Amino acid sequence: MATDREEEQEARQQGPQRSSQPRRRYSRRPSRKRCAFCQDKALKITYKRADLLQNYLTDRGRILPRRATGTCAKHQRELAEAIKRARYLAMLPYTAEHIRRV
Image 1: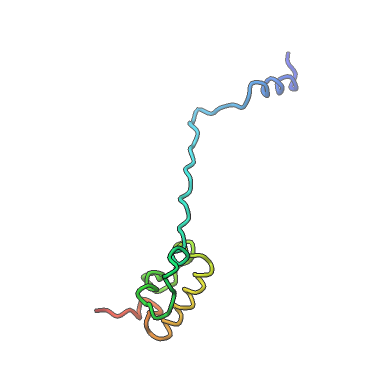
Image 2: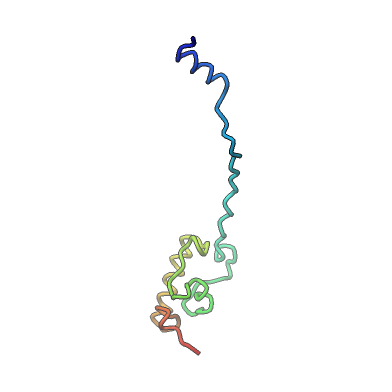
């Protein structure tokens, strides 16, 4: 009869037990979006460009986060400030209810 210790040693020598299920393959995460303002230096953030700022708002009028837009921290702060100024001047809506229905 083999002792418990001998059985453990034999199990280690045989290697890990494999299950009958195939191994999962993990895919790579998609690469991060690059900041459009860092790539194109001519593209300036200003409250006057409501058409540009509209791209960084949801349909409900909320500011999109960095992880959704791919902007860097510096330009995200500038975007938020410009959007808030444009809202104050009624160039952009505060909420979905403020959007004009044409």
